[in-house]
Image (cartoon, rainbow, N blue to C red; front, side, top):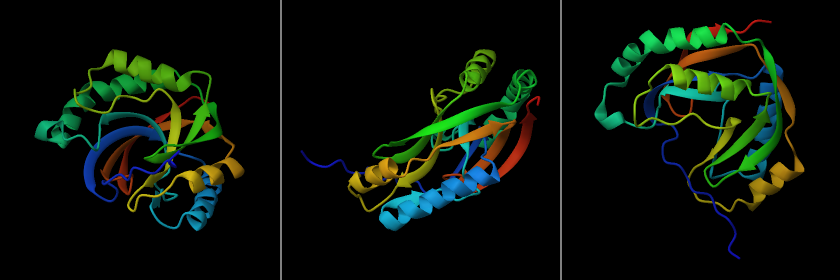
Length: 206
């Protein structure tokens, strides 16, 4: 059987405007992940882009997705229009949420990315469901994910076999617990999260 190979993405480092909701890791957890990624790069020195400590995040959902072009629409104008309904809707939801833990216990290697996958007690999915029921997001964007995850690395050229990455992930599991006490609305300008600004914060009750 032919070994599984990566499918390099071609947008790393490209400028793409987007407005997204996410949260971040604590400094301690970001250090654990960064150290893990450094070890991965030693094993796989080419064909891999790893997230910087500043770019690491836990995905929630997109208001305006970075990669789609929405048929040439002005994304900043889209955001300004969405902000009128999306901002109060998200704040109404998060104002009623309490801080909670996400337990990251598994790594998933796909041909495009390396994901750290976590579990909570339904808080992420509840936020996504309630938000998308309350507002109308523009057609053509990326749909909210159904899992809790952080994309740690993307496969870029050259194409490589995935076996070394899979072996490293199996031999060095990355297990951590992250306390989520706020979400962020972020303007991102270069993928993936290489140039971004936090526009607003949504604090959860302690």
